[in-house]
Image 1: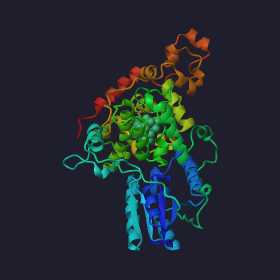
Image 2: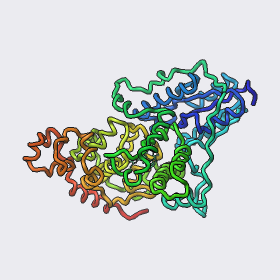
Image 3: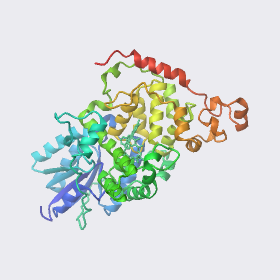
Image 4: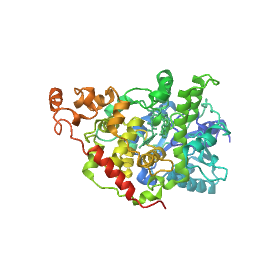
Amino acid sequence: MTASDVIIVWFRQDLRLADNPALAAAAATGAQVLPLYILDDDNAGEWALGAASRWWLHQSLTSLDKSLHGKLSVLAGDAHEILLRTVSETGAAAVYWNRCYEPWRIDHDRRIRKSLQAQGVAVRSYNGSLLYEPTTVHKRDGSPYKVFTPYYRNGCLENAPKPRPLVDQPAGVAFLALPSSSRIEDLRLLPAQRWYERMATNWTPGESGAAQRLDAFLADGISHYSKGRDRPDQRFVSRLSPHLHFGELSPHQVRQRILQSVADDEPDENREHFLRELGWREFSTYLLYHWPEMTRSNLQRKFNRFPWREDSSELQKWQTGQTGIPIVDAGMRELWQTGFMHNRVRMITASFLVKNLLLHWHHGEDWFWDTLVDADLANNSAGWQWVAGSGADAAPYFRIFNPVTQARRFDPDGDYVREFVPELQPLPDKYLHAPWEAPAAVLQEAGIRLGRDYPQPLVDLKESRARALAAFRSMTPAD
Ligand code: FAD
């Protein structure tokens, strides 16, 4: 390549300049680099970005554009067509990108590569977002793992090749912008109604926001992570998931900083536990790559016969945090207000939906997809299949969380519930997680009328548990 050549760097879920292999490789050729983002809703189909993700993306593109001194080009439409058109407009000699693993993207990328190559345009793709790509880890017989522990032990720890080294942020690159670029506002990622304002106070999307979040976690969270990660009332988890999803930082950068934070030869349960959670992120993408149908189909086929109920009113009460079960309502309201929900509470709210209400996990998956700022096709479908018991390596269906016991254990002082269900604030701790157990005098003293100020529980926890177990038993034996 010469300085007059043009390389298009197609940004997707790698909205950063540092440790970006496609960008670094393009810059290293000495060619001019055209950074391009394409919003391709049609090809994404039912997995087009949800509302919270669109809000995030708007901020993240704005931040990337700033880092590129206004040289980020953005367009909306079919990426295939747009790339071919941009190549012919600019005479670009090559298109570089970092790989994505959503099934629709894999198919689409394959077709794009073929068309570009047929026109004599060089195509190079890189690993920007996984420590271990799905094709590199398999059992001795060559088949993919279905169970996390052996996958993690053999694929990521013992005998596993080390993840690729970090690549430097390129300097002195001649960036080029398309005259036909839209403005980021023209992508219409922000909704007309400004419902996202509280969400905006919780997050700083973009590469520098991601770096600050990682610094804050290293300063305050990691040293309590292993024991603290289950406590939604405390701040010991990293909240890096949206930054990782949009690639504002890579798992390689996170891993390296975590390893540097503790002397290498010292065993450290917090460090190991955190790296294991990053391993779950890898494993979810691995499962999606090998079982692309898992976004909608039960990985355990016997669940195709599960007698799900349909009840739109109950679903709506779950979505809006009006179930009358405080920890469930707190989680669903946290999600609505902040675009995030703590992992422990994701498990509790999901279990309540699929077990106590017997509503299909697809409903939960869809709602999370629309409302989470970290909505990620692999992690979300793997998470739902895990809770529903239908996944490859799932929680057994018959292990049913009792949301009250969970709440008493993981939100012992009720701080989390009081934050998101303020109408219950005056209740004494003893009754906070199960207000229906409170004597009338206690409710009166707290000024709460159940059924008016706060809902009566949508279901009886004991009866709905028994109903779920009966539904589980009603499935005929596995295929
Ligand atoms: P930390 O505890 O700080 O963990 C660090 C990183 O490890 C996370 O940022 C994430 O990238 C990864 N990670 C942690 N736990 C998991 C896990 N169980 N599975 C996969 N990766 C994990 N995560 C998403 O990123 N997007 C989703 O759409 C999503 N949907 C979920 C749906 C359900 C029903 C459940 C039970 C879990 C879901 N998760 C999802 C996984 C998990 O809840 C979040 O990754 C985690 O809560 C993010 O918070 P954190 O960054 O503070 O995590």
